Amino acid sequence: MAARIYQKPRNAMQSGRALTDKWILEFEPAEARKPDPLTGWAGSGDTQRQVHLTFGSCDEAKAYADKYAIDYAVIPTPQKTLKIQAYADNFK
Image (cartoon, rainbow, N blue to C red; front, side):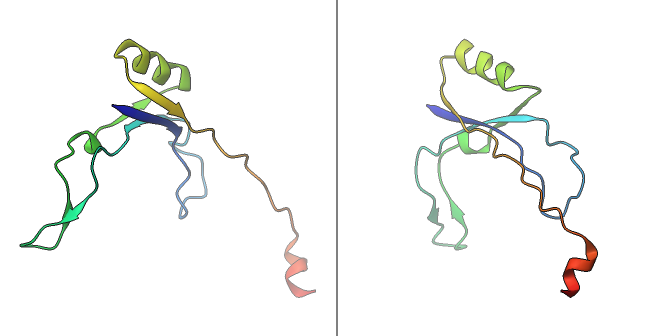
């Protein structure tokens, strides 16, 4: 059972940084989703896909994974780039 640890990204509709300091441990999908013949909804028998554990830091998430012998991969947080521009630049 493998898992990935990453920092929660900021929502596209969100200008603030609320809840972006949390780290999430989620398990890799064990099987592919397939459409249900009756409803057409996508689903699978993989119950680990529903588990999302939240931690305050990356080290806490790593410690949890080590304690329960979970193989994990840490996905680094991408650097935040700011495009600084003045309002007057829109009219050049």
